[in-house]
Image (cartoon, rainbow, N blue to C red; front, top):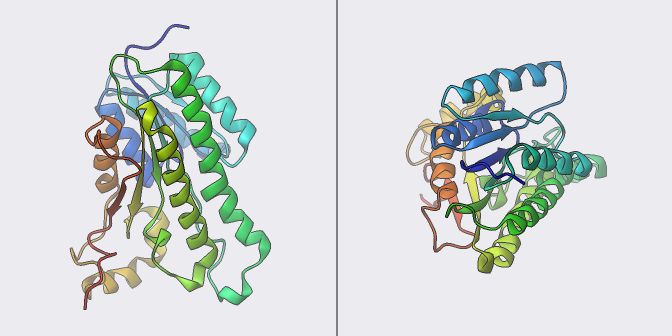
Amino acid sequence: MIHSQRPVALVTGSTRGIGKACALALARAGFHVAINGRDNEDGRARQQAMVAELEQFGIEALALPGDVADLILQQGMLDTVLQRWGRLDCLVNNAGTAAKQRGDLLEVTPENYQYCQDVNTRAMFFFCQKAARAMLSQGELNNQHRSIINITSCSAHSLSISRGEYCVSKAAASMVTQLFALRLAEEGIGVYEIRPGIIETDMTSAVKPKYDQLIGGGLVPMKRWGQPTDIAVVVDALANGNLPFTVGQIIDVDGGLNKSHF
């Protein structure tokens, strides 16, 4: 198998918001980038536009439409990356879902609970597993740091009883990170967790007036919304091995949201 001389990254959920910013940051850093989004007309159009945007940085980009919760499709995505470039150096597990509906914890249905688990936890676990196997098989190429970066949420540790199934899935995703970090430490593969706080994206646009008021009132000590680029700069640093002696590091990117204060 011919290996690309450039490092290769796969970013799930990468046609908008945090995932898009991460893919752009990695392209700027010289990675070939495989992106992922929904397999429908709008999703495919977004991905094609994103490929063109990424390739303006002089790298190659590839669209991998599909639902990351489908484990067979996961393997197909990874196989496509390896066939194209012969290597995978960085997996960014960004794809995720919110609770289908907010409401009383006592009314959460098994179906809605399982929906969050399938996307936010199960998909992440098995993508970590598949990526790790690929990285171990190829070894370290050109002294390039290998990494798995899991994007979770401040809800991995902060309680929100109106969307308990989401919080549980993100807490479990945090444990996924710790387990793979420990397993892969001796192999030289860094596994990290980024916990975004309140980030301004199209997914949070519906609650913007509410959070504008809360942020202005001091909920976030830095008194501003987070931006997707705030996450992307951390992903860039981790993917390039700038925290080489850390294992399972949890990085809160939340403007101080998780800090106890009164």
